[in-house]
Image (tube, rainbow, N blue to C red; front, side, top):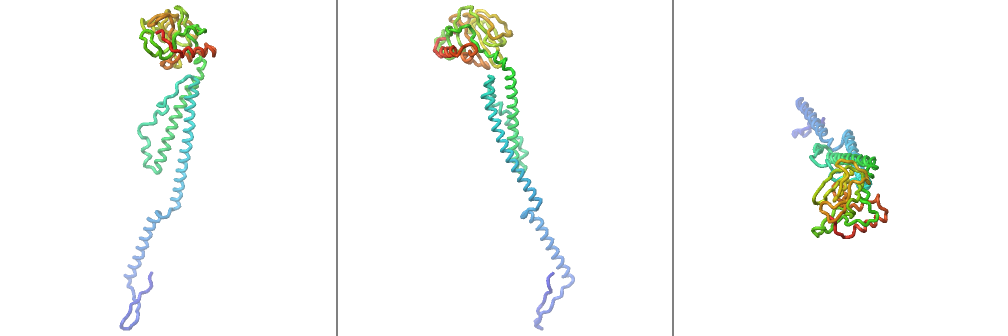
Length: 323
């Protein structure tokens, strides 16, 4: 409340005290109350934006802790991703190589990583970008871990079937020729005996007398028997499982039937000169996942190191194929 006010009296040359009416006093009080209320309201609305309240400070600390934890989780996810990538490399380059299995394609390892943005709902949240990035990394890591676990399940199954795999790989020579004098043509580009032009020769030719025994080079099941006038002539395809197949062509006689199980070393037929052939011989192929490969790499169960080295030397010589 303000002090009393005075008014100058020019006639008496003195200041006289001014007396307020009751109405003026009431209005003065109302003005002070209104001013106090306005100042209080402004302080209530503006103060929190200038100075944090204890509750706001607590929430900010909790929010910062959450951000720090998300960043820590992201670093751990990155570390786990590196460990998983190392496991994937070992899986493709060591474990699957040992068990003669094809590496998993990159399209399989990254399957399910694309598609519709499933994290759009996070964009409106505070720190939504950080949360979305963490969610994406976690989902990708979980997907790759699942695929890798399935791959290890396959490797475990292959390990349990290792003995069967060893028996099934076509790992001996298809005819008895330890002196290595009967190999006529090897795998690769060779001169065709009829057309006299270079042509891919997808197997190995072994010369032998008509009627010589032909042996199954690994355990398996007879998948196909054909009797052709041209091409492979009388031929047999054995499915050894694990992606391996072997083909025996130009046979004079076939001793097995389709669907029959055979053992490594079992006589399945005899050397002949049927189909497109210039002389009695056996055309022999090894296929992995239906792709021809060089059979010279699969005689390790049947040859000494010296014989195997000699076989490789003979295979490298440029020759004309017999079919």
